[in-house]
Length: 123
Image (tube, rainbow, N blue to C red; front, side, top):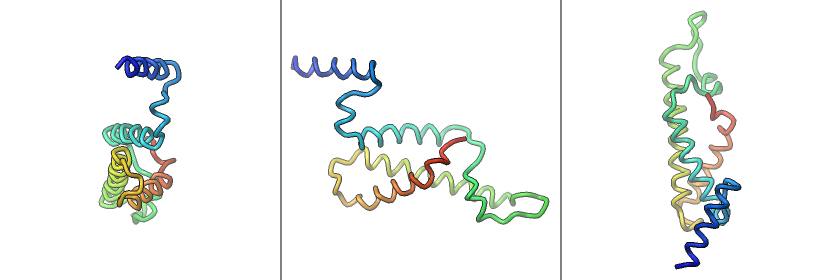
């Protein structure tokens, strides 16, 4: 019991001083996934003003009128779906105890998607 209390104070000190503690780095994958879930949920909730430009490339442009409203909505909802797919994937990783579970392919696809859109997670 005393050892657990001492360890808790040690972790608290490390968190305050360094922003991360030994407990976090024992499972950096889980730590990172938990942080990404929080960040992506906050990103999804915020008022964003657009979506990645590569989504527009698949939309048809209407001469001087600009982007067709249906295509604009389609791009926006597709971007939302990508964000929710990342949230779901990182939640699975954060709550996973067996790294060789049946979700291994899903986790790999999540990371591939994350790498693809990493530089586009801004507004």
